[in-house]
Length: 146
Image (cartoon, rainbow, N blue to C red; front, side, top):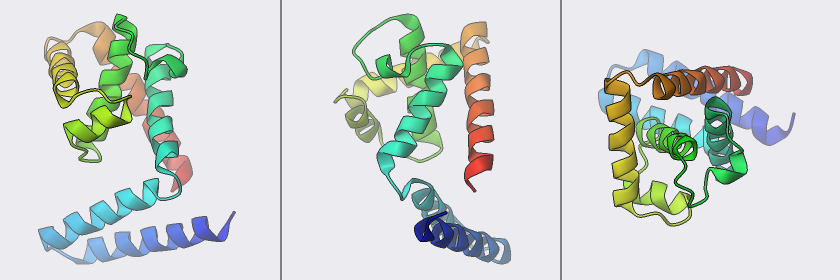
């Protein structure tokens, strides 16, 4: 284990201890942001690549094709899951998410997220199963990192 990883884990654990002792929502929010930064601190592409890999695995597609311009339904679903995770867990803007996916526009990201929400609201089995598989995979992989 490298020194950087040990330092990051120590900082992460200290932040978690501070968060447990404070009730101020502003401080708690800043601690969450710092923890998120730590999870991506080594190499931001590695964090994004992990999200892409897990969504591709959850949907059953080749991870190299997730960032392409293809409009095949399974690739669109895999991208939408990535967008959803980046937006809701890390608070990325639509524009920033689009830039991470080969310069797509913010409107493309927003439309994809609206479609995914529609599928989830109507309990579309393919979308619901893919999102559940993605969440399980991410939970398993996060247990191994921190």
